[in-house]
Image 1: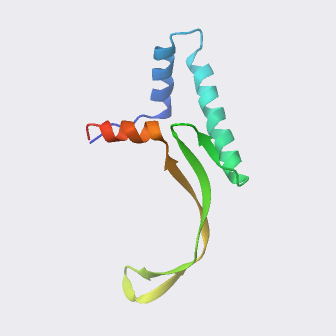
Image 2: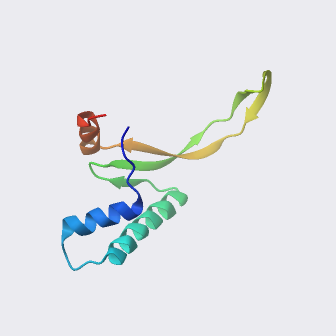
Length: 101
């Protein structure tokens, strides 16, 4: 199973790889600001495109009828809702194809 990289570990890796005057708190602030801007932009209905990485977009899922797992005979209406979709970019897709998992 693959390991999980947390935000803190991402910050540490970036600091090591950049080997610059940026502190961990500087890098953390940049990452957090990027996440905040992506979140705000999606909330405003915008798409966020990170070339070769992927595209984040809001899509509306239509209403549908589901089943109650405890009582499959009963229909459960599921209202329409908006969800975040991610379309993988070329470079990320190629990296995933080469992964060892």
